[in-house]
Image 1 (cartoon, one colour):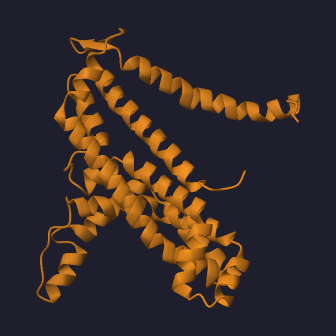
Image 2 (cartoon, helix red, strand yellow; image 1 turned 90 degrees about the vertical axis):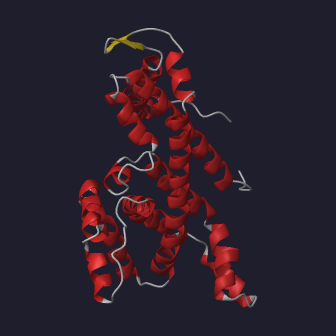
Image 3 (spheres, one colour; image 1 turned 135 degrees about the vertical axis):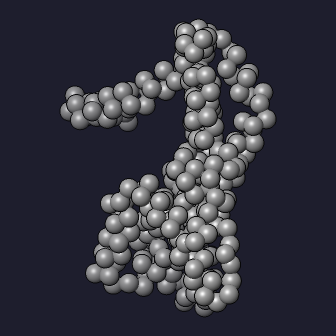
Length: 281
């Protein structure tokens, strides 16, 4: 039976609708329109011209930055998910209720500090004269170049998304049906096999959504590639900045931004479809 749309429900859903229109739909439509504008004498002019799309998509540097950004975000998602799962599993199944609340509180604390400040603090550890190289120097190793590398960028992505991924995985594991684990143990299934055969498949939705959030945050991040990776290799966020500085080419930057949005939407739809694959309606 069809549900009737009530005035009460519309009233309480109206703020969300207004929010989406003002801060998502309208900026997205403006960005689409801006991508067809032209720039002459450092001045943007309203137009309907495909030159920005053909110029950006015809450059090898764009596709190189696109591949680099996608690969780094995917690698960060996999690495973060793998490192976060043992922590989420231990919090969900090994700690008491009081300890679990403290663990969740500790996972939230990093968000009290600016992400930029946390990234800057990593420079103290990763620089040539940083804490890690000094410690390695005591045993006759190094110094190793850790700053301005791809590895440093991945560390920045982990700093950005690791606490969030742990929390999302934890929420998924906390609501897991414990009788499934007990049944597996009754069938003489070992702990490791139970994790891979029961826990992970049962918590697949939460694990995939957590990895998706990590991918979204990493794909659009600008801070880590610049301040930890040294701007090399170039990512799409850096390319947007370089494009706007080059002759005020905001329309071309809009093309790059729209490509990023389209990619994230495709990845999000694919991830959600995979997460709920085989789920009953």
